[in-house]
Length: 360
Image 1 (spheres, rainbow, N blue to C red):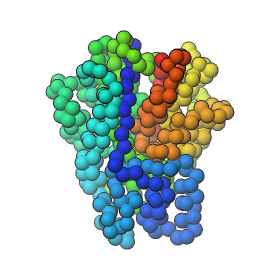
Image 2 (image 1 turned 180 degrees about the vertical axis):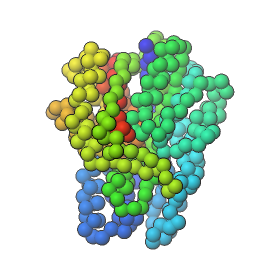
Image 3 (image 1 turned 45 degrees about the vertical axis):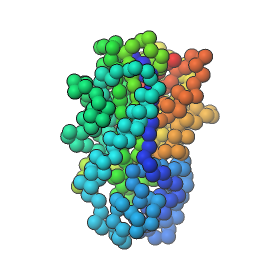
């Protein structure tokens, strides 16, 4: 048995209003008035109020830009090298901020394992070694990285942590998910680029998982996953010389609406539970349409996904940390006098759907 005993979250310094990002993107894409109205409609209907970024430019006049070139065509446009330089400059400190918030909620826990999660920056030596040094962890600390899995990667990391803790009851596994999605915005006027620029943001979340059954926390009861191969071309994340390129078609929400109830029923059957046993739903808010698709697929009536909508509104889609932001919000609102069962799910390239069940 393993338990989640603490979560901490962090965002970068720069908070951008969605309406201000819209103004920036309308200039970047050099849209005519008709396309500007269409983009404005999409932003207004997206359910996002604010997003965070390590880049200040989105809320600044061109003369004060630090990342993009203050020219009419943005040339020279940032190449992969510059994006990775910014990742290396900011990712470790943002991760550390989340870890510090996570660890301040615990007492005397010695970290035995470190798992870093990211799909927006890679290098070797990488984020795991940076954090090993910043946290002053022993050089013998077991460490591993989950890279390039996208929005469901936090659940994959939880699976690994759960396995470590089941193998060793003395294990204390620190997971940190850090994504700087806004480093990869592109200027070409395409549906995929416009969708990415409308949804994605930066953030980090840290989780401490222990094998010590005497610790207070949420017990990890079950994991379940399913891949819908018919959607493998509809959600993708690829490397290029000008940054990482996102494919996110409008059919993803349709596929989730079609398949999600089947996924949930399979996960619940494996855990010998029913929907009525679930007290809280921790769904990755990949976008407003994604949450609406889940709502329809599960036949919800009102309020079951409220924490998910709130995270989407306040932070946007931060990729892997996002579902942990939702989980933190749920945990903070739990009534500890009652039995609580949390069903979590996230989606990513594949189309991959991952779930977890926690109890307290």
